[in-house]
Image (tube, rainbow, N blue to C red; front, side, top):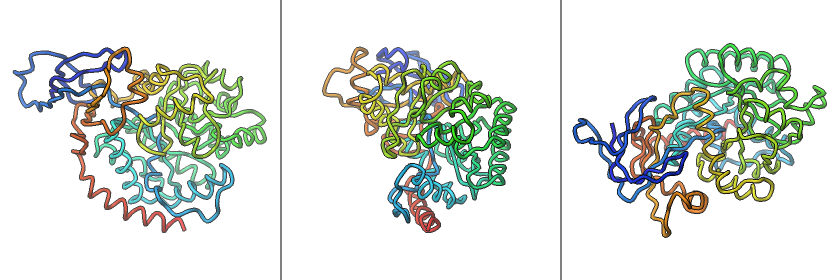
Length: 420
């Protein structure tokens, strides 16, 4: 067990500031005990948190660990001129080149970066069409090794043929038999009716939900109308995807008012990925009409949720109705999603300790201002995941970071070569 001494605890829901000692119990069901007589407890690690701030750690609502080794890669053979060409010449070229060694390095790098940024839970959406079998287990082992909780899925798609889609369905079914997870789909434009219905059956049989990209680009809606004579949310609603409270709809940039009303009336959740949308020039997220079930992700761009929240706020000033409090609520909504759907790994004993030498008073009343304009990942000192200390003074304790980075550079070169 851990004891955090003399820290200022910030309740993540009420934002109450409490000067206290905290006993952190281990395990997925571990609790927190405040300001008790902890001297009699044996075998406790004591961490001095004088002058530091302690609060619940963070979680990522939509990530792509498979993209972790793309940083600095050579330009594609053709310069993409639209979103579909970005997929074809960049990401679908990359995911086809992934093998088990590349994937393991990608997952470890993602988990390490997340942990050092105070993120202790990742909802990941994976694709590797030529290395599907066992891929989710590789990611799970890497995340577990670092100490990061997870909710995984494989991105099932017909874009590489129905045989590969069936392998994706099989991988999902096998993984869900032993792990918590979701049924992943790429997007409506690459998923035919047969595959969609098979995914619905998998989600129902495994008491799960769907994790899918929705209307990230207008071309996704145009494809759905042309081929299925309905818009995407209508298609997903008719298929049964929006009946699941575990369903995650990523992006949702180009929905009309009727589609937004269907989402708002359902138990499904939406994930906003602002900087990815800006990078791909596909539009700005607009929450109006979608209801309260909105959380934040990074879409594989990076593993920093504080940065994601700031991006949502600043870009949202152009197109959304997002104030200080609303930004923080959206940042924290993922905890409600995980708790309400009884997913393990995001309990109260997931904590981040900030070494934040603020030049101005930091209080309950002005917390949102510090959240948006002061707190950054560079202030993360210690990170506790399920009661276990995984980051101390900015350094990972669970893995050898330098060894993994040396290997990841080797695997990145292999990946880039295989993409040619």
